[in-house]
Image 1 (cartoon, rainbow, N blue to C red):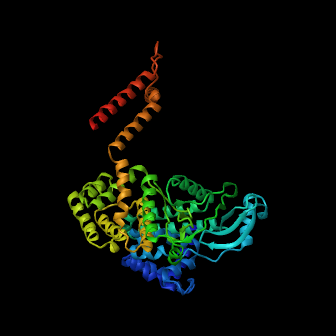
Image 2: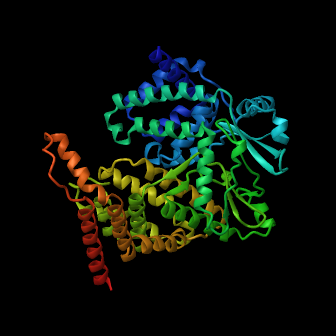
Image 3: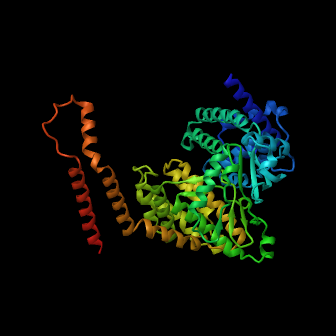
Length: 509
């Protein structure tokens, strides 16, 4: 039953894309080969009359996605993070996709809240407004707590949204597998993995407890950041389908006229946003993955307020170091070091020529550094970098794609506040600080100390662990007459490590 159902969903999708004029734009953006174009038109053109009309005032692709519903709108947003898949022009169009739908009735939202907490809404909130913002997955209401009188924002999932997404995701998997079968060359872009990434993001957003946890973690990580704040999660009024946060008053960053009228320093805000994003990514390994103007406000105090934590990016410590070295290499125009980092991290196959790759990277960086400040663009750098790495066989890395895409979005936000901003000059102090803290002698000492800590924690157990492993493969020996305690050997090992650390530090001094 699933196969025919998925085929019908794809036919309806193709018909809608044909009817709205989006099919041609998508195929051109993907530079689709003839077989894929033929398959797309076969799915779409004969059934064009079955397609949804959408809003004729919207651009074709946006019109098609909004007509097909929440899952398609969200998928369009996720694809905006994959310029390597859809191309940079299409990615930019998808970034401005207005994730807005007609709100569902307030009575439905109230019923969902009552079901979530088992209490009447009026006992939880003294005031509860109609929807003030409606998106593909949830909508937001302004309210006032009944117990404290605090003004809050209440986010409520759309009813039956989980079932709707599961149905569409199943069809997306079917489409990705079909594309991989028809076009083996697309496997480098890993279409099925793209859908898996989409599924993981969406499933996280469909449980508001996870978004509340992400908001809480992000607030804790950024508590020391001057001029930046995250609304507080109100846990007693948050659950799977409902999330309540403190109300954040402020001017949307998209309203430049209001920002200037309020007396805020727009260029300083642009610099702060870019540096904060880099600091969150490099220092914490946890960054806001959707930092467009709609999710950022300027509070009356001048603080930047972040909203909507459904998409959060995470990168491990090793990847952070690699990414920082790549950025630092470009900032210093040390293209050979950038090439070496790609090889050391395994991003580029080891059988490729290092010097040739370094020359290709120089062809990426030098034209951009020759531009004046208003034209220096991270987006252009990443566009060229994608082309080069594809030529040298670099596989797609989802976590870096999200980081790079968000950096492009943040650049756009910063440049809207200050068209003359020099991206490299603003980024340099943050990247240099990270390099100094994490790739210098102090970082090496810290890494060695972590090794010592691990040895101190597990050292006393090492002889027993080794013995247990040996016992799995050999018959048990007769019990010894006496047995020395395990701990002296472990502490001797740790002592040797400490001695080595002391010698190494001495060479630095």
